[in-house]
Length: 396
Image (cartoon, rainbow, N blue to C red; front, side):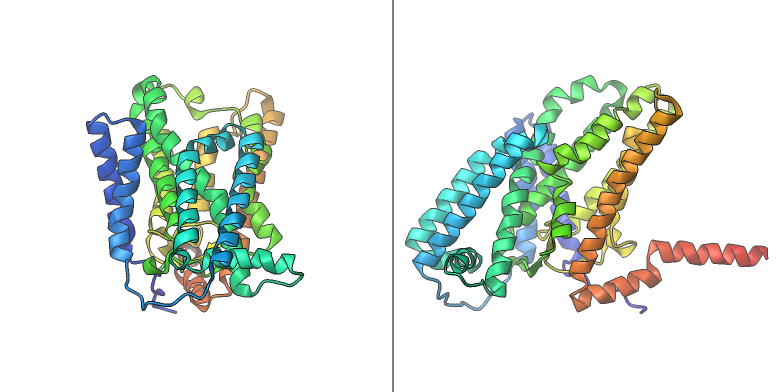
């Protein structure tokens, strides 16, 4: 296959969103805004141009869902959200406890949904009533249909990840006030990392709230396998407090800045390498535009870093962790180095499982099968393989 399959999101959508986010960030910093105002400028700066580019008029459809179905849906989503927030707050460590920062937003959003459910349930779309009807079907001893099941799973995804993205995007920007002054000559590195992760999580926020058909971002399907969910949730609170935090922090307590002399040429090269990997990781989120979300299929992305590999985000994040945690440097001798490297490899294995389960889910779409076939022939691995074969042949 010579032609790369068309991407579900135009390249300019993410580009304008990233530009808007950067302009919002620079404007907020230049005006010395509070971290909350800076967060609003960054998120809205990214969201508004992407929403304008993605907005589409659709034929008006008369929704037949009644008020009772809508209220059942709102009740179901509310119970889900409260249960997930409690788990994240109580068992998710510091990263999970940050979800308290998202409570004002969630309370406002919940109040709006309740008012609409009481007064104008037709404005809620179909996924909220469908989620409620899925639960009602179980209570009545039946089974929800595919649409109801997909809606309920989609809301499970949003209830889990949206509070984390809200809290973390604000936390990254708030760290400018207390973390940046202590970074010394590596201030540029710290500022770059904060900006990149703030943009990444801000695009996560936008993705989880932009599931309207008017934006083309509706959830087409959700991974329904246990392995798919476990491998994804293991990377986020509360499970990450047991899995990733235990391995990465307890086993890899090193920090590359403690290993290299500050300001040395090697330290600068090391910092630039981490920034470059993190930039590709963030770019991998940005190219989704308004459609980023875990465990879901909302269209196949084939441009940006996905032009070269199917999993650029996982690849670059895991490589950056090797550079940040330097598990191959240990005061515990060879045994300490071995344990640290094995621990990091275990973390890498979790992301490998995530990648495989995501592929298994997306392969149900013919567009993804065409994309996977194209990557097999034209991706970075294929290019390196052909170059290696040419070198071997030239030397023989």
